[in-house]
Image (cartoon, rainbow over all chains, first blue to last red; front, side):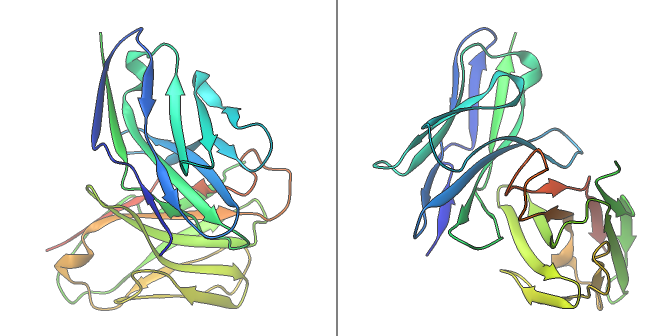
Length: 113
Length: 117
């Protein structure tokens, strides 16, 4: 079965420290991978995507993610966290030629001053 | 551009009542989707559409119906509301062509928070 896993329900980090939000996936074929962010009472906003090419992709608000095919992972990273980064983050995968995205269960990021 | 517009933003229904959640997009996207979001469960696909007149079931379609008579609109119908349908509902759209900031990704609406009592 095709799936996305975010193993941490919550990640806590101090402002200014680097952050990592983990994501692993299981799909057939070449995956298209995405990260979205959701602020309270808002819809999901696109952060970044991996389609092909360089394994390190850069996105909005200073976030980046590294695609690792051998580990089937797509971890979200940021060198220096901000309090305003506190939100709910979703990893998603679009298998092969389908239009549908499969979402992970989400990880709450809490950045403390 | 308005993007994806969902109405209403909030609604309280009594058990057994019916309602339609509206979704409209102005980006000429072919694909449209309905998801529900429950705490700790991520987003579950209810129904999706690949174009006007074409719809298909997602992961959790029971208790819902959809139609897609135009490219722009994709309403979600709840016929007999049940407490298990208490959730936040998101509509999204996507295009298979370039030109949008999230190529091959989704543009989401702001959601409808539905409570069934």
